[in-house]
Structures are given as structure tokens and as C-alpha cells.
Image (tube, rainbow, N blue to C red; front, side):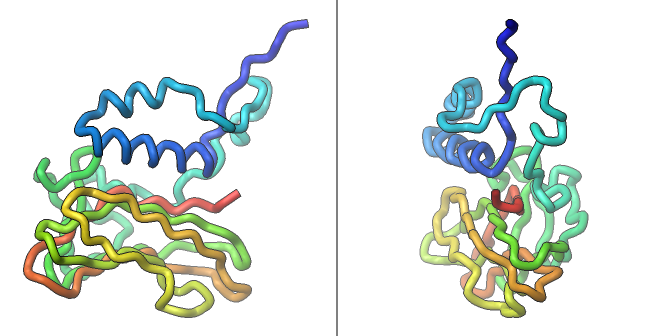
Length: 196
């Protein structure tokens, strides 16, 4: 009997691991670490036989369209004075990121299911030490507080927010906003997935 080949799911666990690898690669100053990490099998990852349907293999895509701004514009994000930048000193991954000058921000309204667990990821940094801004989620259980994180590092850091929608939630907003300081904040790679 032939042993079936296995393929790894690109689900929440894999995405989680990918972000850890990206974080490690960036902190070591190069993509070589990331490239090598991608070649390694993911410990504890779920595997499927090659005969499984493709839709089962490609689980958990981001619910946000072009969360990395790689089309060079805001796309489905609403800008409140924020703008896309291609300055390589300001970009985390790819060719584009978003610059948040003081008093500016952006948001993305996305449809969600009630009573469902989600994970939101984003990368952010500030240009000046001692400053900060917020990345988060609004509208969970009808509230606009409690699901955000401060970003204060001058090197890109990963923000992760886990949350569960309420029984009446149908839409939420993911956002970033800088309301203090004199230097910009920078954001990139917004990702929202339904947790498994």
C-alpha cells in the first residue's frame, strides 16, 4: 500500500508560527533566517493526505483584502489622514506600509460571525522613542474599547489581539490611530483570521 504524501494546513497555527518566524528574522536583521525557517516542518502542525480537498488545505485566509497595502493604495481601508508610503526605511515587508502622522489613522470594516473567535495581527512601530499609538479592534460586543494594544517600539513589532464576537456582532473595525507626539507611527501587514 502506498503511503500518502502529507501537506501542512495553512491555518491559524501555521500563521501564528509564520509571524513568529518573521519576527525572529527581522530581529536578526535578515531574511535568511526567515527563508530557512520556512523550509523547516512546523512542529505540531496538522497534516492532511494529498487526496484531501484543496479547500481544506487552504484554511483561514485573512478576511482583510490587501492588508499589506501592496497595491500601493489604501484599498478597502478608510483613511483618516493616513497615507501609503513606499519609503524602504518605513516599510516592514513588501514595498508599502502606512504612515500615521499625529492625529491620523485608518480603519477597515469587516463582516464577522456572531459568537466566533478571531485573531487580529498587525505590525507597527514609531519613528521616535517615547511616543506611541494604538492598534486594535472596535465594535466587539458593541463596544469601542478594551481590544487594543499600544505600539511604542522604534523597531517593527507584532501586535496580536484575540477576541470573541458577541451574539449581535455582524461587523467590526480593525484600526490604527496616532493621537499624540510629533513623529509618525507606521503600520503594515494587517491580518484577521477566524480562530480554530
